[in-house]
Figure 1 (cartoon, rainbow, N blue to C red):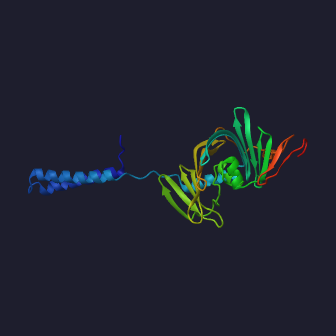
Figure 2: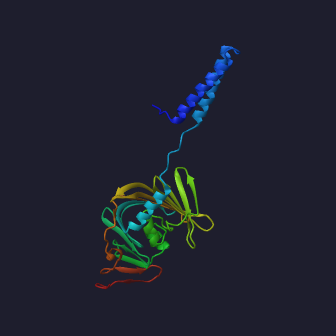
Figure 3: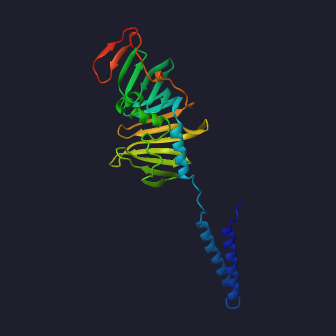
Length: 300
């Protein structure tokens, strides 16, 4: 049943008054059928105008609330632990795997790639070093943590701090959320704000339903560097958190999708979680060097 709005009542009253005026003015000078035609024409005109009016648009969630919610998540989140399904596609092929992700801000990250037999590969990184342990051949690789090394072993071509931000559902190149956006526009149902910072990529943040759903970064020429989509927000500990992340990296033509299964946030994580040390007989390989060595038993 349609609701009767004040506008509807006003239109009906106006139509009735106009019809009465027409009938009164022409009842003695014009044939009845011509008077009726004039009344019908008036009604059709008003009906067409009413059908064209769609009513007020739904009021969107204020962007300042969405930005405030994102800023709260940025301030509160310290750590993340979750099993996840990782789906990667790129020039080198397609890979889907189950992983255990552990991250701690600002730049500590550990990925345990799982197989039916247990851990197939472990990657640990911080802002300075990355270590990769392959238990099948007892090999430990170590080197500088960089966009290139993370791309090789985690499929995320970002520096460790950026990668951790992405996993937390936050902008990888986080602008000052309190800063005034350089511009704003809409893309479908999404409201987009743009930020520009000296020495940093241009960031575009897209919001829908009060949540961050898109982060897009562009270089100084305006070309897209990456695009991250966040979705499937759920309540965990009184906080809305995305369970799905899809990131596309244009330079490498790669896409990585992550689906979190049971994220736990803000738990204490020991520093040793992000340190991989050689064991007895472990073969050490320095990334970027051609030499390798075999660790002696009991050697750190």
